[in-house]
Each structure stands twice: as C-alpha cells, then as structure tokens.
Length: 235
Image (tube, rainbow, N blue to C red; front, side, top):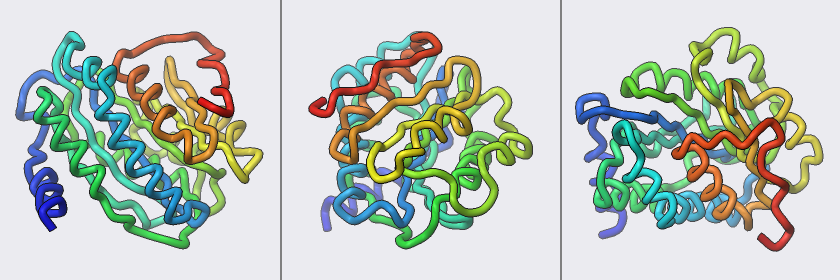
C-alpha cells in the first residue's frame, strides 16, 4: 500500500513541464500491451523501463546535458481506443525528479488485455501528448512493440493526419514470434531525421535495449543510416 501511495503521489506531482524552466527534449515513451504480451512479458517491460531510467548512464545523460531539462511522458497502447497514460509530463531536472518517475513506472498496473495492435492510433495519441506538452527544442516518440499493425489505420495515415512532421519517432522492436516486426518498424514506423530502431531479443532483453535507446535519444546521438548492430542473443 505504501508503494502504491508513493506512486500515486509521483503521478500527482507531475506538473506541466513547460512552466518549470527551459526544456531541451520532450520524450514520449509508448509501451505495447496488446494481446501478444502476456503477464510475465508485461512485468519484464514495466520493470525494464523503470530500471533503464534508473541506470547511471541514463541519469547522467538526463542531468548533465546542455540546453535545459528533459520532460518525460509515458503511456501504454494496444487497440484503437486502448491508450492509457501512466506518467504525465514530468520535468526531470534532478535526481529526486528521476526517483519519482522510476517509482511511478515500477508500480504501474496493466491497463488493457486482449486487444489488437494499433500502431497508428498509438502515434496519434503520442501526437496529442506532444501538442499539449512542453515547448522543448526536440520532440521524440519512443514506441516499443512486438508485432505489426493489425487493426485500424497504420503509421502512414497517422503521419498524414497528425502533427508529427518535426517529431523524431524511434522504434524498440521486441523480437520473438512475429518474423515481420523488425521490417515493419524500419519501413513504416520510424520517422524523421536521425530516427532509428533498437532491437530487443525477446522481453528478456527489454531492459538492456531500453537503456541503450534512452541513452542514445537523450544524447541525440547520430550513428548513421545502419543504426546499431543487432544485439547478441546473450546481451
């Protein structure tokens, strides 16, 4: 009960980041909770995200970067209307700020089960968050998933109809049962200059993949058209 109360307090604490100082990066993290994600995989994703944000290199990148603070927002997505906010816009300007976000993310509960994979709708929801979010120098959407779009409109329609022109959209592809997921993300999901795909070997590799991805996004690292090499099965 104490952890739940602290997590709730962390969410209530999240104030409009635009009112709290200069911001160099508005980062939206979107987590897949579609029907292909079972309970164990959900926990690996939830705890992996919290651990990645808590990683020393990621903390250092957030707090030592030049040009202002980082603003973070996190939601889950699956079907057409199944998007759930878990961390509203929060400015990460100190270790205490990061601690509160880590605690909140480590204590989230799954919002939906058994729904399809609607990547286009997830992108539309992310666009709405950015529209009401802080006015930062860069805007990035980080969308993770283990399958291709199988319901509703796809990424192409989202990019046509939502204000995502100046937004970098990166993908964290969870390799597993769907052999076409990596190609789908590379072909249809990633968007904008410098956009890239990070690979996770199943949900067991989610923590390491998310750590690499956050570090790269926060530092605005440009590694070329071929991105990072595919991770080894043991890393």
